[in-house]
Length: 479
Image (cartoon, rainbow, N blue to C red; front, top):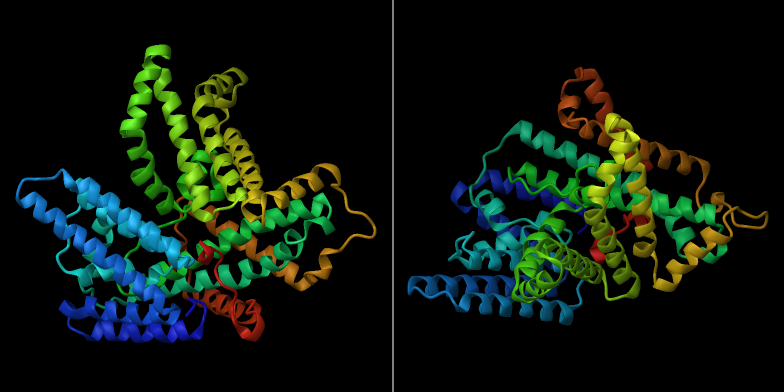
């Protein structure tokens, strides 16, 4: 039951109607039943995994509470490690796309209980709702227990303005996905799936299209998920903050898939850096090169390890591993070069032209991101190498080469360009701290209704619905 289907729209209407009619104390039970039904439509094994994960988390919470009652806490870390291993084994055995987002939230809950930053939940059904709340589906956002659990069990009342804002956000998500992302996918798939047929110029254009395709696809899903949840009064974590306006690679990753980055930071990077192995390494290095340099070396090694893990999380393949190491290396270089770049900026006067400096940083970052997308989108490391080779050795098109018009007509091309421009304008408003919703509400009523009708018409008439009017799956469902 994809978010872009009529079935989901009817399902959401039924969920919202039941939620607001039932007494507040049982509304969370209604959400649990609705989420269970939703996941049965995705496949029985997803429900089995959800129930098993919920049981593990509840069992660990019960065990943690019992140990703390008797004043013992030594076994908490070992038990948490066992829960993590069981989740990983289950993921490998099921081989189900998207299930890793369940695991991230479950592991985060157990680690928070182990650290004492979250209290163990006594009711396993409440844990099941936290993990399986249907707007999360299989792409996140990766919420934390302390942030979302109180909202899930509060039982919110009906608020017309909140419902209206939620529907607006869902409409925007449909526009991003159906009008922009799925249309760009025609060009991206047609060129990057067979790079040997195309010149470097077309390949560069396809990589740029892929950058906007994956953004519109993933951000569109998030807007649909967060908008659907907002209808019910439950606010999920934001996952994007105008990433293509970032002026550096570290800033880019603070704006793209923010909950995943925060998860790797809090549950992998910091524990790794503070673990016994890195502490012993730091101590040995400090004897040879001093504490400051030893700390820098350990930080760089931890970054590389985390980013290699991030790449392999997307898939056990060479091109994903290289993608992860590529960003790990960029972040390491960013850390090492930051002081030197600061001094260089002062020497050449860039510090006196902050706007130019930021614009230069944005273009540089976007180019580096495009290079990363070649590794990410390629089917293999060999195909990524072929793309780079064609760009370097055969950039200009030849007379007998395929044409873009073979893949997309003029009308579709115009719609794609216009759609990207609209998304860019919306992000520009956000970047300037002018929320799109507030700006929309400030318009006269006639203009608001005009925009709404235009957006609905664009989704209905210009959306790419695929064979049998079935919209293409979201890209991140595969991870």
